[in-house]
Length: 598
Image (tube, rainbow, N blue to C red; front, side, top):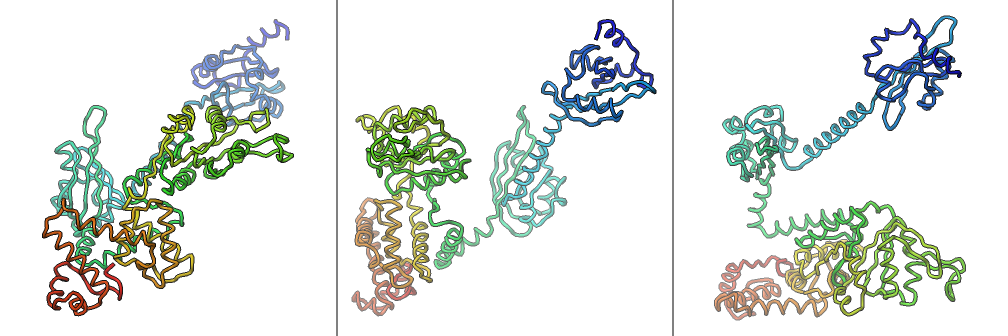
């Protein structure tokens, strides 16, 4: 367009139908008038500030996203409204209005509303709403009761568990002061009032108006200036626990029934290889494994043979973001040294005599996007350790006989029962590879250090093998058998315990496992422990040693003879003496024939 025509376009008046230009000048939205030729004929200050334009600029060169809508509006003289466009990483809502003049081509008025900040605000509000819903769900799904009060002890909120524990409704207490609730006898003590008084955490026992006993813990919440703003009280019902504890003290049978019931619930939820953790060291290991599973860092699992290193690797894989991808398990000690490199990294066709014509991918390639578990990593040859180190550094492998590097996304887990640090000193393991693998070490404790796990593991695998071979009766352990199994040191760890359980189930005739069903090593461990306990002079006086020996003798006799008369006859004393001593040592004669009280 000639220069003089452009000047006339810029200076041409806007159509009379439009809103007063003075009003357009103060609108915060960008207002752009487009001439039928496609040139911008007018911009209000907001448009000039937002886009740095001037009249005479071609509209489609600045706003290509709106080109088709502009043409349609000019041609059909129909408005195009609520168009969402992104300009210079900013979000706008565009409205195109056709300005009609009789007998003249249509101008277009384009109004651009900047929605960037509004969209951000909306997203934040949605995030806050979602977070609020999550917090509400977490609070209401808690099995323990929760009270939230302000700094003046006014109740702001309670969850559904608190309603159940105290037999109240939230509407009855929200907005009321804890002092009034104590005065009315709804509760007898308030941790909230104690926290406000002391400014620190308070724990106490509380009795509710319904006769329940709760253990409550109040925690203060301070603002940035150190001022108390909230008190959060957690309450746990210990009524049933307390009652159960009293019953268990009087009835040993109920105690055994309770434990078996809990074990049955556990067995119903777990698979045959699920980890059982009762000891603190094992529980801590599982927590570490779950935490490690959330990242892609290399982990080194250390522990004795049979302790369960592979189960820890399975646990990490199950809870990782790679759970849907393959987990390839390799025992480095089971592969011939001459084939380790080709098995791990693959080979190209013709790489060596006997190689497949089309070549073969290695385990690293098969584990793409998944996890590779290298068990017995200490057995890996030094030549293969170099290639493994390279992969850990840059994620690249090269097949044997090949020249092409392959970039892979594989997470590495390694395990060993050997002392890698000592092997580094003797030259049996590369120092740089050791520190690459030793990013996150996880130590699996041997079974002898997690004695709390032994009995649950025994019950689990005994019932597992019983179901496997079709036994319908529940498997029970007599007291001598239980003592023998708990006394045995399990040098082979969990793997040996599993084998012992399988042997015992197969060899047993009925539902009771006897000492004859155990191997000699396991059965003799009880005798060794009894002798060791009886001869522990540092812990007992002569009188106490005699009483321990007497009780041990009576337990054995009660396991062999069913009546007091038979025991008295075997030991050469009268029946009254046996009755008195059995009562003294709390020994019962109600076990099945041939078994003492389990």
